[in-house]
Length: 330
Image (cartoon, rainbow, N blue to C red):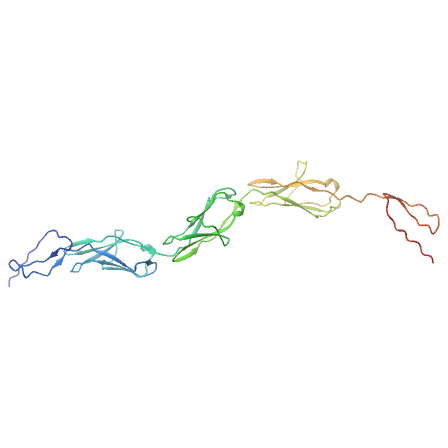
C-alpha cells in the first residue's frame, strides 16, 4: 500500500469545518476538525465571598483537545487546565481574568471577566486633621478609613454615645468647642460584618472661662481669724492663678487658694483673681470681704447703795436692760 500525504497552509475563520480526502475519493473524507472559536470564561458561584471556594472555567468548542493558558491583568498564571480553582479566595485575588485556548489550527483568547471578592470591613482607623494642637473655635475633621467590599457604612461615637450621621467617612467640626473634647471612635459595617476602630482622644485647648471666687468661712469674718479665698477656673491647659486687691498694683498672692491667716480690718476690701494660660487670660468679678462689726464699747457707773435692801442699778451708755432679783430674807 502506498501512503500519500499533503499539507495545506491558509487562513481559517473561527468555526470552520476542516477535513481532507484523496482526490477522486471525496466521499471518504477524514474526520472534521474545527478552528477554535473565541473561548468564554464562567465563574462559580455567582457571588464571591472571601474565604470561599471559586472555580473559573474556560470553554472552547473545538472538537480536539486544546491547551489553555490563564491570565490575570495580562500576567500569565501557572495553570494550564481549563479550570482555575481557588480553594479559599482572598480579596487580593480580585481582578480581571482571561484565558487562551490553543490547538493545531490556532490560538484564541477570551474576553476579560472581573472577579469581585466581597469581604467584611477590616479594622478601621481614625485620623485627625489638623494633627497638631486643637484650639477652640478652629475647624477640625475626623476621618474614618475602612477597607471593605462593598463599601461600609460609617457610624461615629463619642464615649459610647452615637453621634448624628454624617455623609461619608468624615466627621467635621466647623468651630470646635470645649464641650466637644472627649473620646471618639468609628464603626464600619456592611452586610458581611462590622468592625470598630481604636479610640482617639480629642483635646481642645481654650482660654480660661470666667473664674469664680469663694470665701471660707462663708459666715461673718471675725478679726484675727484665718480666711481662705479660692479661685475656680475652667481652662485647658490648666490656668495659673494670681490674686489682686482692688486699687493695688502688685499681686497679693499666687495659686488657687489665697490664705490670710490673721485677718484685720485693714485686710477688708475687694479682691479678685486672674486666670491665665497660653491661650489667654480672664479676671473674676470683685469679691468684698470685711471684718464683722465688733460690739460697741459700754461704759457703766455703779452708784453706792443707800440701804441693804436697795438694789444696785448701774448707769450704762448705751443703756442696758437688767433684771433685778429681790434679795431673800433669812
